[in-house]
Length: 314
Image (cartoon, rainbow, N blue to C red):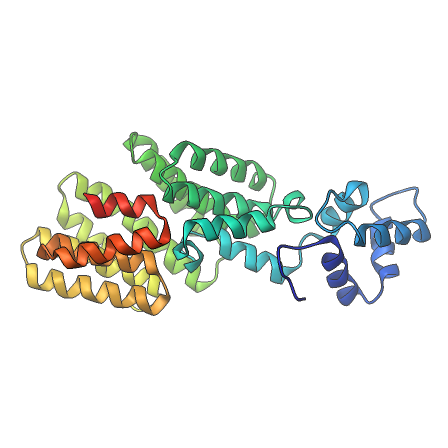
């Protein structure tokens, strides 16, 4: 299926016909969930639906989404937009918002797959330091996912981590509770290996952040060292960047610089532009290298990333 800007009703029906063989077969399956309609009238309704583009699909659009959902390849693409550890969040903020808005229309906007759009909007809000907006999008995502099966545990973990990040600005207790929720979900979730590695790295990073703030650099360093090495570039970045900070705080400046440079390499290998900028900031913090800080600030400006700009200005 060739998509140019989100998903239209016609493209959704094209995918269903390719899967089920004919429009009639799709209509028969719908009749099982729509008593009182004959197959001919349902087919006519579906033909009209084909012409709706990305406008409201009405009764039959709702039935179609409820019965068939979103094609798996489309859901996978939307999931990529919603997970923070995806390289999508290393694109310029304006471009990310443009992409999310293209998808935030029927039929996607009326499907359960819209949970990934809410999460994508939440990540953009965090990058813009609009924490109240991020919390609103996280609540919307939580409302969508509440009735969904365990297949959506990745979204539930993402929500918990967003909540923990927002709470870390002012409520340490609430942040800990959110991290506990994420930990419990992760323990039982069925996830691809890459996602599990990234979630584990993010959880370790959150907990290490609180340990470092409390001055317990030994515990924080142990948390970063518990992240498996060389599993995924995002996780490897988190591991070595965290180890760089802890090693520096414990007095070994040269080893810390070597780890910070390795973190930048991991970020580059994974296509994580923002993480590379954060790695440059770590190098600047450890070494006092003003050039590294300037390079990180320039990346933040090119990405339109206010959160990254704030880090570069500290």
